[in-house]
Image 1 (spheres, helix red, strand yellow):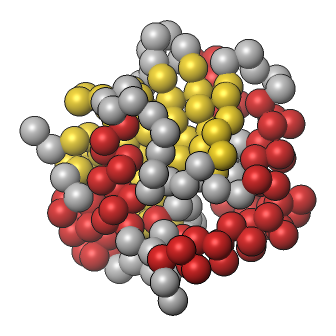
Image 2: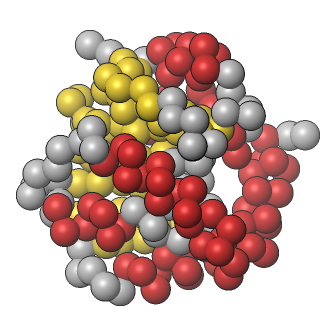
Length: 186
């Protein structure tokens, strides 16, 4: 399957399931987010990017801790669901875009989250490089890898080969994903 066909397929899937996404996945997504946030500090002037933000579950955890939160997703209908959550905050903005071609200034975000994204991307290495391009030099970059898609050593190798340094890896048996809290390699 070509890269664009895979992306279109994913986009259509999330467009079709946007209204029931939270019923299907909110519990798992929330568990990943909460496990991650135990290992991260925020500051008032921070800029958070949630790549593949889905319905915006991360917003309530970070929006009140930073200056700006941006949710990016390729699915228009999923972003419409995220818009409902974003209304609760004055500093959350939504962008319809492809994670491999983000319309942001380089080295801008202090925190980048890619939760449940990589397994949907045709070239995860390219996606990680794009994430790194928009992350500031000392940014915290959170990436998850679905266990049934990425063996642990393969996931760690993917992160390292993309230029990420793993600061903390959460391999909780109750989660379907590995959660890596990373920074850019020096």
